[in-house]
Structure formats: C-alpha cells, structure tokens
Image (cartoon, rainbow, N blue to C red; front, side, top):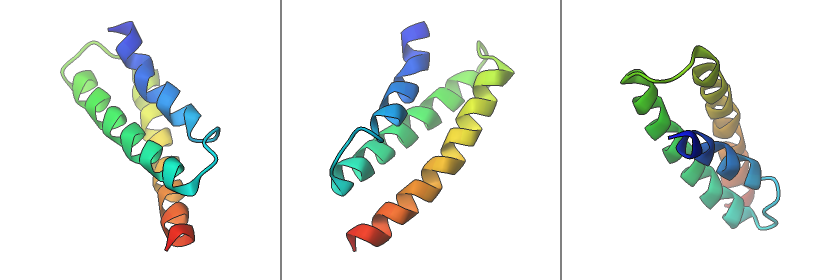
Amino acid sequence: MAGRRNDWKSVYESIQREESLAGQLKLCQKARRLMQQRTLELAAGGGSPDEESAIDEALRELWVLEEKLRKMIN
C-alpha cells in the first residue's frame, strides 16, 4: 500500500511539469480523485495524521489551481 500512498503525490507534482493548460487541468482532476480515494482509505484506518494534513493542504491548493486553469482555458 506504500506505493499507493504516493500515487497522489506523484501526479500532484507532475502538474507543474506539464506544459499545456489542458494537460495541467487533467492532471489536477486525476490528482484530486486519487487524493479523495486515499482520504477514504485513511478514514478506514491505516494512515497517519501527517498524511491526512498533507492531503488536506494539497486539496486546497489544487482547488485554487484548478479554478485558475479553468479561467485561463475559457
């Protein structure tokens, strides 16, 4: 399950490397789904409060980024 814990992080970090705005938005959506899935796993047990905090912070930052990207694309 350790690799699974890092899935959302790797996708989240890849957003900055993506050059196209549409590609960034798709990665945002994928990262958000992975974060939500991981949050459900953590709620069922087996996670750390630090990881929960990291996901919460990343979700807030991701929401802001998604909104900016949507405005830039439209």
